Length: 336
Ligand code: F6R
Image (cartoon, rainbow, N blue to C red; front, side):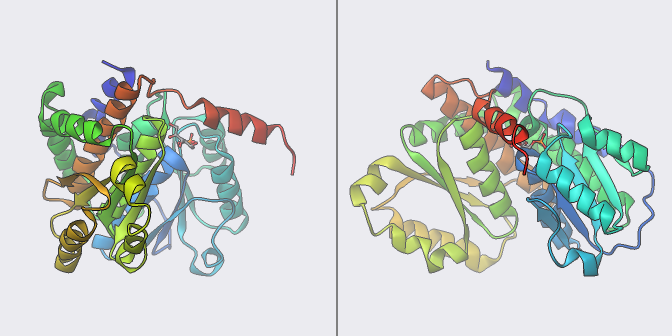
């Protein structure tokens, strides 16, 4: 079993850890939040956005330097999430927020961000250390959700986190559950193909994005994602070109979330029927669970397993991401 597969198996414990967190009330007048984070940490902001949307609260993921132009006027709570605590875009967003006088909170395992939060007296959720940010998605997204709850922006997140843990645990079932079996079939269908992941706007799109990035980083393969209904207004036309390439070298996976807009489910069905002769269809996955968070994680865990199975089939180690480390070193060596 690969070390990354072992880390995926810790996802239920990560979610239960977050359910058990006791984050002290955060005093803020903010009525919305901006979650600054990149890559395997940044997905926590997208997860929080989907959860908060259902609660009628605006949470915006921020995956870049500085702050969006509206932040100075709307004055969101800035939640910085970085596994290492050293990611330059996130550091820059934090310093921009501090300079603008925004309230700031942090979720990290350490590094610059933990030091900065401690010296400024900002609320800090200290996530347990681990080898890779993307394998800590339960700690990081759970930590962000509990921070938003402590700031009075979200209701109690513990029940949803516990349900997510239970759903993921059932899917994994010690490695012999339905999740690994489904993931194995999908990885086989995707072998030698560029994966294209489709989900409905909201939770389905967050999961599709996570599948893509996990196939990139763990599977070391190109992958792309897109969301309904927008893809029906442009991307669908692209499948009319390169019929041989599309049929033999592309593999589309459809992610479905119960409770999504019925027209989105219908669009997915019609889209699949329209493109199935041209694009290789690798399969479909249906989310499980009652809370949106459980549904999201039921898709995330299958995608994570697909990505390690793709790595296994290609004979690559899912764990290291040397090219990202190399890029970060080169950036650190350059002054701008
Ligand atoms: C590595 C990974 C990356 C990092 C990203 C930001 O597993 O997934 O996408 O998450 O480079 O680094 P951190 O998470 O330390 O802020």
